[in-house]
Image (cartoon, rainbow, N blue to C red):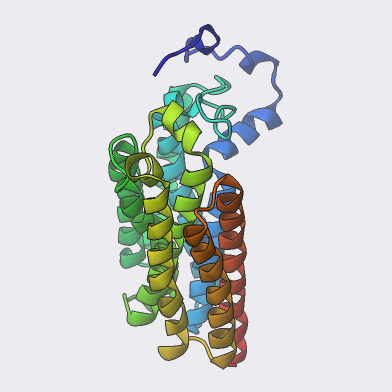
Length: 309
């Protein structure tokens, strides 16, 4: 990897912008470390699974579960930002994050991540139950100590990363039921297979950035054709798994109809890309469809499960 003269690294201990910025700018930078868009998706799926369980729990449990999950995910993302601060400089979507842009220092980010984890994990373990806290700890460790270090080495990091990414809905289930049960595992499976297709879309249209950053991906290691085929295979697993909430009794016929319709749409877009050897434009479309699919699916879950339809 070559580094041009524009890539001169400033001392991390004294970011040049720090003195001129107001308090709100600093707060926004700390929030940026948690990757709030990803975190909001996590909270959406966690809350959805808590709602689907149908178990009455206190407002305190809801607060501890959601705040603890958000804090755990935020800590994982913060540590990820620390570990990937150098490679982030080479990707357009990450170059302006607080660490590569030198608006925060590594020690500041590390302290922030430790504080988040130190508050979030006890909130899950003591405010909810030990099982949810254990799952949160597993998600944090897998994301930081396995997924992140593997990203420059092998495309299989995607499979590892999908595990902590799929744990929040299972955590939502255990938060209200206190046990790992089939419905919670089904929700885990939905998010697991969805992430794999979603990640492949990103890896396809950001392939040049991944290469410049020294990160690997399925398209870079195996080629675009293999990546598109894998996306179709993951969709082939996702569609039947997505119908299972109706089978195991946490959703009804309305959800089943929506799941089949959304799955058929998502799969059609994926198959068309594979058949026609779709390029960057298709990959971006596939990415957008993946977001609409998940939003629609969990909205249908909440409505169907809540109304008993």
